[in-house]
Image (cartoon, rainbow, N blue to C red; front, side):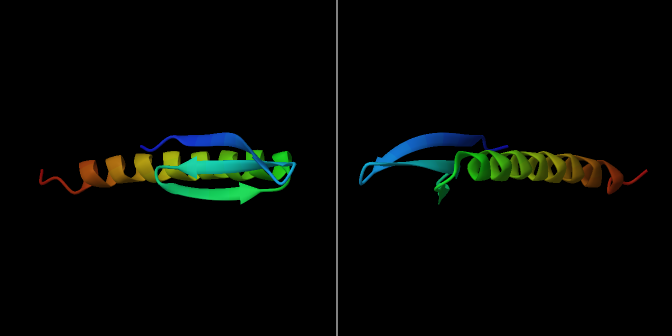
Length: 62
């Protein structure tokens, strides 16, 4: 599973927060918005990973 990362950036004297997963990134002006989005994204990716594992186990012939 890809890691969800938050990095700070400086752009025109302002601090921005960038949430990254793999090569994809989304930039926020507010830290709380970035942290909330990152937490939700992390939970969703974890859930999808668990779903993929359980689907793989259920589809095996018995």
